[in-house]
Length: 319
Image 1: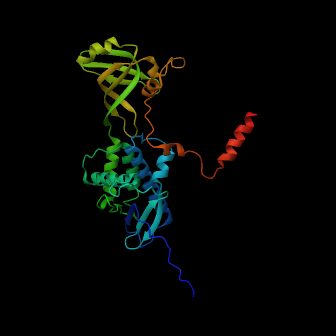
Image 2: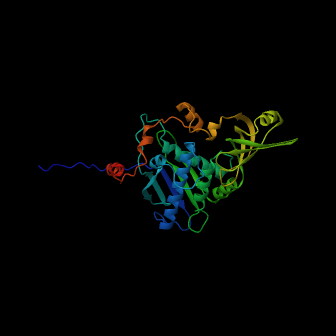
Image 3: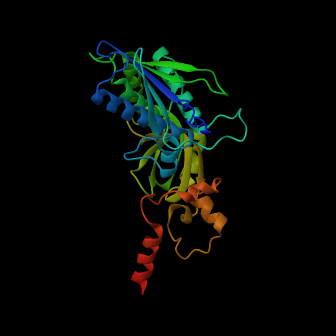
């Protein structure tokens, strides 16, 4: 008797993100290759910046993201549907199954948070958004408003932990992202450096802090801080307060001091070679946090390379 084969085809993968393109140049189920490439590039850039923002990392920088975030958040095109052309994306490296089904995965959080920011820009709300994320959405929205594409709908599909969220990326989002980026922003920042100048003129109290790396920053302060500032002139200090951030960057133009503390010279990288500091003191000075996920140590070596051959070459060179 001939044995019957069971159909073992994998079930269709559920997309983590769907983009729906509309416009005079968009035909059902088709998209020009140049437009497809740009849509994919800009969508991935937005995902990367949002992932960095959620991790508390610097988002306004050149170059790629960290290996860990790249592995967690790289998209893969898994479907091109008819109707108003729909691009469906999964993850190039699917995340591990959550121990509890009602937990949101990191990638789902990234996609959902981007949908909220896009809706906020479209509605003109003053939603707090990371500058790097806004810059990425400015790039994505630059694809709209032309002869080909008039709108891209960003869709965070329904999951076990959230409802379906949709947001329209259009020329309105582009204009509001541009306005947001062109204006200086305010944020709480801290600077470590040498307090090497102060001016105590009435109604114009200011000083200058020279960090170990980067340009000096002009700081202002209130009369109640005048005595502290005067006592700390030419000393290493840490100042904290509301900073004015330059448009299109994360450069601090000025900072209004709310708190100022004296620092040991070790915190600025001086005299630390022969200093007998404990590991906890070094970690505190360098702002190093404990590693919570051991998988962090697993990345960094290209998968296509032979690590055994690499180590053998190192050991041979030492002989």
